[in-house]
Image (cartoon, rainbow, N blue to C red; front, side, top):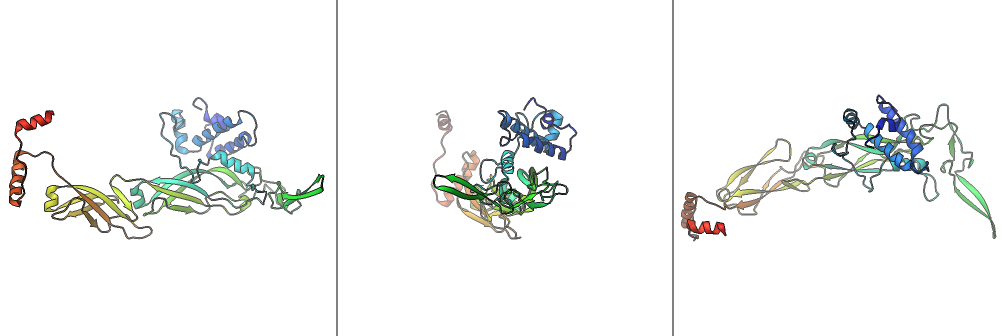
Length: 375
């Protein structure tokens, strides 16, 4: 693809509108998809077509390609963030077209599924975004309502008629002669998918299904306080139903990234901080950057604070989902001891140790320190 003109691959001009690009892709994809085209290079050409559409259907990628002539995401270009589906495998446009050509027919020979299926995507956010809430655009492939026929599946002047194959029954009876005699069997009508209905003039854009393969751009609003692994359901943005049947939902699974300072426990936050032996002994006030924007949290270190002591700061944790309340912040204290002391500092500590009744090691002479350093 590096040396190919993406506009030429799609068969459109460089001034083509978004709708022209979309229609050109659908038209070529129907012809090149391996499910209908058995030529040896059909699969490779379909992949090239899909890559070209991936760039030209995205305004930012298209602008970069027009300016620099490079494909975004390739070596040296910006990395494309992919949102994997929940059900594994990266459900892409090729799979969408396979479903489209299959017409949604069931594998068990029963009636065709007319309602759209739920779809799943995952989204990664930071802990700060989980605390404040965030709006994020995702891009995914799905069968969406056909704009030409508004989902009816009917072309101009078209209307529903009784299926000529099964005469409205939705099932076809076949008779097979065997050595035991005539054997009769019934199966779902392949022409109407078991509905018993057909179209007198089906929509040419969607082949009478009322839905077409499309690339959906959707802004998902993630509420403040969302938890890792929580799922958000967006009604009607899964797979479109056939001929106006109910659409499935989009289920977005939230993955919250680990934070460098805070560790989350439901609505509570835990953080570890270092304080000097003097701050621990005398008490102090230290300040931490909170989880909310521009928030500064004051932590009071009590006199005589011990190593691994936990200090609770009320209502400075995560916001609770759909609530104005917040969890608490638990600060885990690590008392640090200086590794090197100046002479006056050591003398001051020796005097303090003497007053406290503690015995300490005498200061080593300079030559001994030098020898230890060399060793």
